[in-house]
Image (cartoon, rainbow, N blue to C red):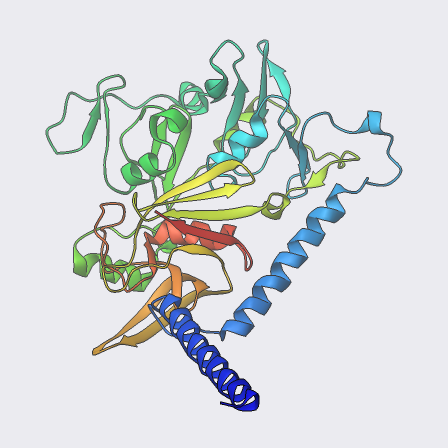
Length: 406
């Protein structure tokens, strides 16, 4: 065979090998694409562009904050992380750990905004918030040094305490320490938002105050606001026979503000200290981690765990994809539809939807309550309880990283 023919044959063989390799790579890449739960609202390129723009914007925001604020001498800057809340005109600092405690235990939804600076009451450093009083207890172990003050007990000492009960036999949880019970919507809110550690024991039964159902605890007062319920979800709960709670149905009363005013504590707003930042969740890099083995989700601000929630992920054949993604599109409510093979589905009024990759999303669910049980029943999405989905929706943003792993 001539040298020319050998070269041509070699070139033809190399071309065929390259084509075969290319076809093989394309098929492997297709195989790696995640199973979609629902139709993706954006193309892959549009989703990547949205994430990149959002992450760049947040990075620039944090970079600006890292610059000195005005012509401030270093000695004048706060020595511990301190943020300012313009909503009430007060600061919260980590000098006594109050800022991290506030961030890690519900934030505005649980405690409200600060209404005083740190001050000393009866020899102890405290700070009043709209719905709570934080106290520094240096004599305790480090992880227990920040405690909520007993403002529910203190308020009832002023108003009068309801009578106790004998041990009831009605299925409610009974607390012999205070001779009161806990059940229903208040029990679920108490347990989910911190339980005994945050709210303490119940000090009353559910009682009516000015047309509202309320219940007093050692460190708080819970108020039921049925008008905050979603009518569609309330109907689903009645039909399906299990509770579907939304975030606003049970709220904490402003006992912190009431008690501060009764004690004539100055709650007037103050100007922002130089060198401090205005509070925003984006001050810290946010990320969501989903553990498919545990069927639990964890949300972080930097290294601080700020939220935990049970999930239900994709069943076999519709497995939730593993990898590092980011929220690229958000809808407070959406009717979602999808098909795979011979199976198609349409689900109306899905609340608090956040897409993370293709048609796979974080979202609330009203059609089951198997979250955290180990039962995987979605078509790939990360199912959450409605109130957990709402909290994450309001906390996260387009660009927030979502890491899914076993």
